[in-house]
Image (tube, each protein chain N blue to C red):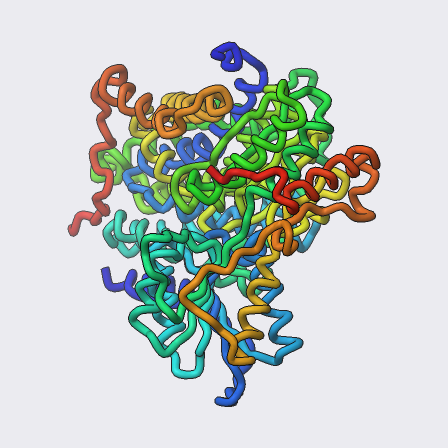
Amino acid sequence: MFDSLISFAFLSQTLRISIPYALPAIGGTFSERGGVANIALEGILLIAAFATTVGTFWSNDPLIGICCGVGAGMVTAFLHGIISVTLKADQIVSGIAINLLAIGVTKFSCQLIFNSSSNSARIVGMEKWNFPSSIPLLENPFVAGTVVVLIIAHVVLFRTRFGLRLRSVGEHPAAAESLGINVSRVRHAGVLISGVLAGAGGAWLAIDQHSFTDGMSAGRGFIALAALIIGKWTPLGAAGACLLFGCAESISIQLQSSFHGLQFIQLIPYIITMFVLAGFIGRSIPPATIGIPYEKEKH
Amino acid sequence: MKPLLPFILVGILLGYSGCTKKSSEDQKPEVLKVGLVFDVGGRGDKSFNDAAFRGLVRANKELSVEYEYIEPGSGVDREAALRQMASRDNISLIFGIGFIFTDDITNIAKEFPAKKFACIDYTYDSLKQLPSNLVALEFKEEEGSYLVGVLAALLTKTNTVGFIGGMESPLIKKFERGYFSGAKSVNPKCDILVGYAGITGDAFKNPGKGKELALGQISHGADIIYHASGVTGLGVIEAAREQQKLVIGVDSDQYHEAPGYILTSMTKVVDIAIFETIRATIGGTFIGGHARIFDLKSKGVDYVYDDNNKNLIPEHIHQQVEQIRNKIISGEITVSSQ
């Protein structure tokens, strides 16, 4: 029964399920390291998935669709940035507002474009892509892309000047500003990066499913948030946590066919999450000023 | 806080205006107006809800009734949607599409005794009295599922077939049981893999999960998968297309979702049930308080065999399935729904 877990199908399924968790989680790391809590990831995923569907539907080219999705993710994140960085509103409230807005906007537009507020028409997807690769796991361009993104994200955050500045405005914005760093601009950049990556995650959802379904993000944005906390606000840690969630979900899918006891099988992902949270991770310390808008000092 | 208020308001407004639609603006009181609330998954599921919508459109064309529909989002919206329809003066017949409406529509029917109600797949409890203004429209899914189970078990090359359900519930268990008994009756050695997308209504609108479940079953050797899972099934069909396997569609003829990969579909005449109920209401012959059963005999459930899928089903196997159909109709075979 458990031999099914040591197979190629299991491994590739784990990776596929992890993608829409990992991309927003890595993105969220940038936003939160800069001091902007981003619970809008869920809404960004949803809007990006819808934009990808519409872009692909009209152009018949998944690449254009993905660009639309990433663009829409960026725009949505920018909105979050405007509200919470420029206007200094509460970041959690702004995130909730964006999540609500995403549900409404996508349903409304879906009705206008596809004449159903629940489902879009079918779009072309990735099966027509020819991604040159000799390693079968990397056949899926999104898997390869996520790995590349992960490495770049880690290097940018911990090995570049921008990364240092981003982390400093999250830890001590006043000190950063005293060194001539434009706190608002750096925070905006962090939020935008989270929008781009969460947008890519939404694009994957739509491309993989070949359509848009209302509410198709299904809480993945929040799982991504949990992953980045478990991963201690680092891209590598967040991606590792996502892999764990993906693995747990894949186990429950693979075991369903052999087991009769659905409720228990469906508990597996949650049980694993609880164990990991309780035992193996240790204390997870957030960036010092997360959730606190930065007010310039008055001179 | 202030700058956020507009976003929240706009979001809520858009959400609501997105789900209701009027078919026409001018309202003549003498024309029958029908309200319909869709199941989880909504329009465009190419299956259950779309079958219901076909019935509505046909009634609009042939009986010139007017209609209004709501595609509810989450669970809480369903009762509100029914109530909204029921409290409108010009709507006199209200449909709830799906077993998930059972409790809500019973309560609303009692609350609005002057209106007529009909519920597809109502979970009928013989111990409880149905309100006299509510008709339950039931289908013998187990009979149709039995036939496609026979077909799958005769055609599988790997001796492994799959079943993927949406929400694990008594209704979907009927599909599974029928399919299981049908498959075992002709091929006792056949392996039947079973998967469900979840235990809530949202399990009917999760194509991503459907696709992964199907890929999982295919990696275990299944070469024909029967789905009874609404929009989730679109993911099952996607997986079959990717892996060159066969799917048995459900509720509507799903051939056009993936031509060449749809072995057949277990059809439920939800459209006819709705059309007939509307016609009965117009003719004054609407009778509530009972369950109307659509079975294999009355062609209320069936499987598709036509020019599209003829080449996937060899003639002798088709004959064999037809013989079993006749035995079910004559009562020689009884299909248990438990």
